[in-house]
Image 1 (tube, helix red, strand yellow):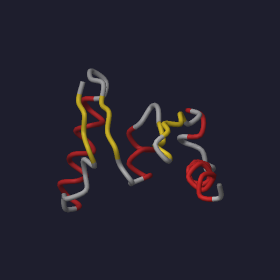
Image 2 (cartoon, rainbow, N blue to C red):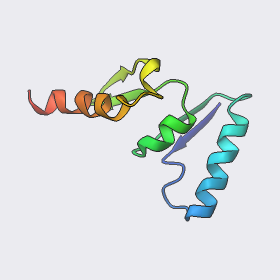
Image 3 (spheres, rainbow, N blue to C red):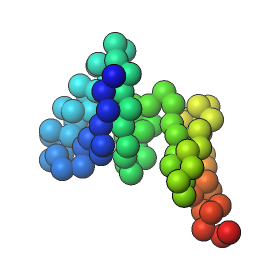
Image 4 (cartoon, one colour):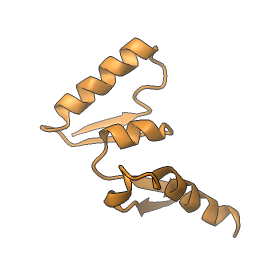
Length: 84
């Protein structure tokens, strides 16, 4: 199991792409858990996504990961508690 916090945040573009490709390669043999604010990274790498929203973990429907509604769904989840 590999646990990463914001794995691409401080890398330049070239190193970030290399790191992303490495993560894609090793994810077949490892469980990789990472936190990120980069939605594109989640759609490129993740099989499952959990959103931390106001201290509560919310599992996102896996069908949405590659769909055009992905970003809108994430924003909707995050806005729900703002209006409370």
